[in-house]
Length: 471
Image (cartoon, rainbow, N blue to C red; front, side, top):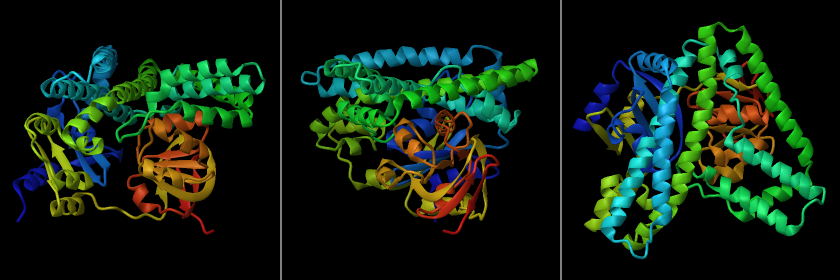
């Protein structure tokens, strides 16, 4: 006998198509705001399809659920009409400034439990509002893929300006080249590193407790660059960026006016996603002390608190309501699905039932995907699902991921090639692999389950094909 919630999911999924948005290691509260439409503020400017997530040990796979993907066409049409994303970005910028100011100015020694609960709800409300920007980008990204060929998107989606991660990388390379040339004394090096730290430390803070970078980490990165050839790498990085821009501009000149408008939008989406990551990173960074204070008052770990839903954390603070193992159970294995009226969370055996009915894994001999960054490489597979897997990665390995975020940058530099479930050619893994010049194929559903650690594969990122090879 199944529950009403299971039946709600089953009926809502029947006759629908599932568009994989890959996934990542994630806290339950982060996932809730991504998946649950009713949790997000009213007035969203782009209609998004229903979402469903499957969570296992805090690693999620999530999908957009739609009958035919008509929301993608509508989103693209709406985005092409005016300054839609400009409006969304301004909303994010305004709310970001507001919550960061609150989090920086709060005196945790004097604030009451009631006011602390209000602050955490303000944080959640801001976080929920931020979701509109990447959600809208994902919808429009898919709309673009329905009307433009993959190679054109790959070329035209190069952003006009360097991404945040690229700017950080170049600043460190520039500093390293000056250090190597003995142009700077120790005090100046410290000042310059602190400046980089202040500007970029929170960029890697993401959905699953990724810590901000420390001064010691930046010192270590700088030392590695100094021991290599930083000025050569700096010049090569900029030369590739300028070459990609020239290729983009040549192709833009050949497109008709409507195609050119779509192509420009693809590039804007890359920049907007980058801005979204920076915004998330900054508020998550400044909320670290918020969760630490709640942890101190409730005797619950910050990790546990981040598996609670907004009203649960308020009840924990104000009513001292106790939550037990059921919270961690749903982080270990659950399904979340809903619409604007209702959202349900399945746990236990019903998760397995739903997965078997709708989300069985197809094992393939040859794997085909979309080319994000051209090149060919062969090597040993290293599957990375969360930061705890980072230590496995060795230079030359084939990095296999659901998606990447800024915290994965040093892994991507080690990779011989990258393979990702995330399918967007404007996604972080696509954009960053192009910037680094690492061969990359994206959009292969379940590839993190199909390819196993230690297997030898050839990644042909000219054709978008992955083949198993014998060692």
